[in-house]
Image (cartoon, rainbow, N blue to C red; front, side, top):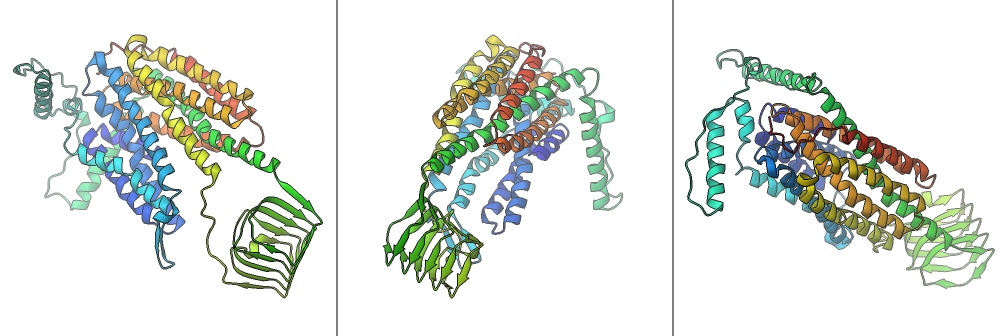
Amino acid sequence: MMVGAFLWGGLADKVGRRRCLIVALAINCVFVFLSAFAQGYGFFLFFRVLSGVGIGGTVPIVYSYFSEFLQMDKRGEHLSWLCMFWMIGGIYASFTAWGIIPRYGWGFSMGTEFQFHSWRVFVLVAALPAISSLVGLTFMPESPRFLLETAKHDEAWMILKQVHDTNWRAKGQPEKVFTVTHIKAPKTAEDEFIEIQSATGTALQRWAVRSLTLCKLVLKNVASLLSVELRFATLFMAIIWFCMAFSYYGLSVWFPDMIKHLQYEEYESKVKVFHRERVENFHFNFSLENQIHKEGEYINDSFIKIEMKSVRFEGSLFEGCRFEDIRSTDTVFENCTIRSTRFSDTDLWEEKFIDCRIENTTFEHNKQGCHLDTVEENDVLIYLVSFLGSLAVLPGNIISALFMEKIGRVKIIGGSMLISAGCTFLLFLSFSQSAIIALQCLFCGVSVAAWNGIQVVTVELFPTSKRATAFGLLNALCKLAAVLGSSIFPSFVGVTRAVPILLSFAALVCGGLVALRLPDTRDKILQ
């Protein structure tokens, strides 16, 4: 996504918003479809990476494209409503994941070579909004501001006339004649593409020259963001994007990991420990869960059609026992002696016997893959947390949309980031799952207002010829910060919560203070 944001953002300023957006969405849809059917982990990752290149290009182009159809006094509000669809997408993804992935019976297989499980169904369902967007975009016009920027005045005039006529019809008033008194054309000769006559060279050579020229223009556009007029805006926005993304995405991964850790600690506190028990000629017909058996002796016992969850046998003796139709998870035998024992139709493989002495023992018809297909309560909670986190941003979205023009972008960004910093500090006082879930919802609800303001200001600070390039560069920096945050924060789960909290607090305070130095762009006409 980082690569895609930089690539497509730069191309959109030279090739066109609509054309690049269609190609980026098409790349995403194609490789999402292929990833759903990929049978190898390597192929799956490869297709997801290419899908990410397409996804990464959509965000910078969409905001630039949409903003260039809006009038000044409603621009901030309508861009904030656009931001709300990120929340709707998050709710759609978490809700469908919750409803589809645990449905193991939805999959099918064709021999041992092709497996199609429920998570693959989810991958396809998650791509439906992108497919519908791609279809809808084919009926949309190009941005008139981009067309004017590239000296395509007639095309821009036709689109503006269409917008004008549609608006008058929507008001229920008689249509007025659309007239243009003058056109400001910023296009200069140095920006023109190098054209080659069709009779000159081969088709490959002509394509190579055009591509090289396009790359030079894109890189020149990127370098221009550090010009005297734009360097402070670029620097300030880069700091704000990085700080916000580092904290937001880092905590987005840290919250569910921390909840899992608390669940694990609670589960471990309830473990049952059995010392030196001797069980002889007994038939185990009930499940074993969250148990540790130390130095036990099991003579001529039967373990048939049962489940073993988080069971550990340490230094125990099994002699003349039978294990049949066993399904297990997180179950191990360590330093055990196993004599004259038969394992049939189980998933107790060799790696589950650690430093064990196995004598005169047979393994028959071992199960393949994971066969505990019951829905875990912990997994349900994680789906619920994801859903609540997505839903919690609704109030922040509505408030930021309604007050974006009244309060101003700068105050919304700075205030939201500083309040979010205060929310992270409250994590020092949270020691239960419910407290962390509540703070996650609060953090998401407040920080979304900052995100909305950041995206609105990014659109308004830069001119049309550099808008998508700047948004793409800053969004790429955002993804870099997301990679760093989602890698650093989870590494401290179970070690200390102070480091993630202080890192996110410092990043948000830094970004919030820098945001207060931004100019107010409410009354700025897009250049």
